[in-house]
Image 1 (tube, rainbow, N blue to C red):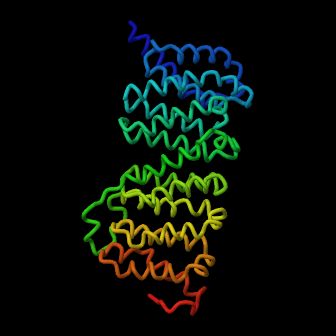
Image 2 (tube, one colour):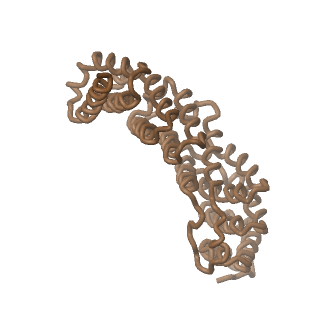
Length: 353
């Protein structure tokens, strides 16, 4: 009997979540009070099956999206603790399908109604960080938590400055994304191949880190993240692990577009970080040097060429003479050589065209 009741409750939530999108806003508002009570009782009752509570989270989110005004939406903010508790129970149960489903609902709400999380933002962000850092969870689950955080960062028009007010958020988020870049495999095939192998050795963690660092920097801009980035990248570039040195160079390349207006003030430090790795013992780090140089040239032309053309050309010349074919054939080496041709003219005798 209990199983049957649970089934009916879940079915009711699922049906409501599907139907609410077709209900007019004028019809939704009058039912708000009754539904609020139903949702609250369902979400806050730990004895109710987790699948039912997840279905209730979906129904709540759909309902909030259909509410006609911000004031009416805010009346449902007291449901957020129960929604977060449901999410926590889902990932603690290690039910992959359950926690992924719940996280997808939260991402949808973060995109459409980011201000809904405002009153309990610190707790919400803390829970999402716990998920991203829980190595016992499936990668897909952790990546969805990352996506939630980046979605809130990108919601700056609907919730201006909201994420900047969360204590230490920018530093912790940047560190979390930077750590994802460490998950790269030193594939033996990469070392000996004479043709470009592209993303050989890259993992799903690496790809998520790369994509989200770019989005993170573009959304927040250099004024918010440049100092934090320089501090963390400098520490990584001096680390004994090649993965950290590689991550520092690649992360710099990924964020420089979003931070260029501020980072140009630290151009000498950026160039130093990159060029100090030219003679790195690991070939993948030397490859990353070329990639980083290319991005710096794109963003800081012609200032970088005018001040550092000799050092940059020497670094590119060393790459073209590298003992590892992958470094030699790195497309960015040849692309970089195109930048100074029109702008520096006869400033250097080095010509590798």
